[in-house]
Length: 139
Image (cartoon, rainbow, N blue to C red; front, side):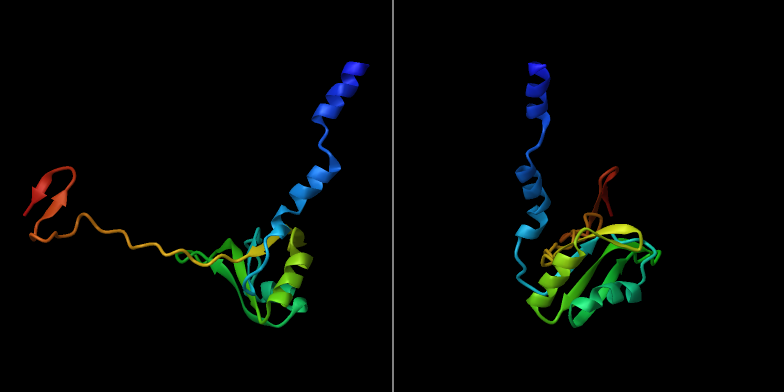
């Protein structure tokens, strides 16, 4: 009996610890009024998306990111409000809520990272020749 109670204490997560894990997503403060929304249904349209976030303030821009080739939703989008306070209110109210049957997560949008364009190795070099990795020099 004593062994069972000790094991239960070891494997039980304290409620204060679980509440800390639940609030980790909300700990970061907003520095811009732009929000990143993930977990969207592939069936959600731009209009429905904007309508869901409209009650929290004036929206500057709301769009769902789509695949270039197929036009299908990638399952995430961005909403930009006129002020950080409106964005914070939307984040608090909509985070971990259902939208069209899917649980969505609302986080601060991060600035886009600069990625240099990859240098093509198959193109001509300074000497006018190009390199083929399988054959060698081509003229």
